[in-house]
Length: 201
Ligand code: ADP
Image 1 (spheres, protein in one colour):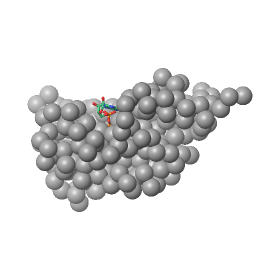
Image 2 (cartoon, rainbow, N blue to C red):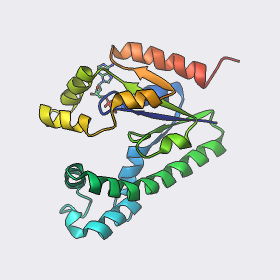
Image 3 (cartoon, rainbow, N blue to C red):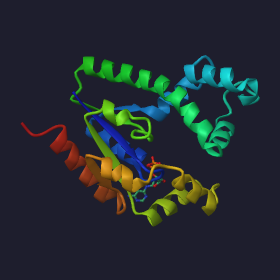
Image 4 (cartoon, rainbow, N blue to C red):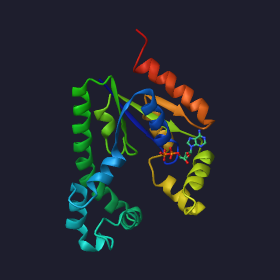
C-alpha cells in the first residue's frame, strides 16, 4: 500500500484536492479531523491542554476554547513549538493506527492529509509527499475570500507564520498547481492518481 502525504500552504486548496482524491477512490486519513476528535473532552489533546494550561483554557460548555488556544500560541512561537512537540505525537499515533487498519483492509493507497506534514517531520512516514500550491497573490485572495473575518494584515501574518510554500514545493515529490481553474486541478489530480497509484493493468 502506498502512503501519500498531502500538504500545502494555507488556502492553497489541500482540502479541495483531498476531496477530489476521495472521489478517485483514495482512503483519506485527515490529521485535522483527528486533532478535533482528540480535542473533545476525554481525548488525549484535551487532557494535555487542561493539564498544561488549567481549566481557563475551556469554553463555558467545557470544550476546549480552540480559538483562544490558537490566539495564544500564534502570538508566541516558542510556546507554539512546545505545544506542537507534545500534541503532534498524539495525533501521529492515531493517524498511524488508522493507516495500519487501512493496510489490513487491503487498500492500494492512503492519503495522509496533513497541513504540517514537513513541519512535524511526518514526510518521513510517507512514501511520497504531494504539495498543493498557488501563486502568493492567489493564496492571499483565496484565504481572505474563505475567511472574511480575517483582515488583510491577519491573512498575511497567517501566511508568513508558515513554512514558506516555496520550501514545501522544493521538498515535494509532486507539486499540484491549483492556481488555475478547479477543473484543471481536478484533471491533473485524476491523471496523477491514475499514474502513481492505480496504473492500468
Ligand atoms: P486549504 O485546505 O489548503 O486551506 P481549501 O481547500 O479550503 O484550502 O481552499 C481554499 C479556498 O479556495 C476555498 O474557499 C476553496 O473553495 C477555494 N478553491 C480551491 N481551489 C480553487 C480553485 N482552483 N479555484 C478557485 N477557488 C478554489
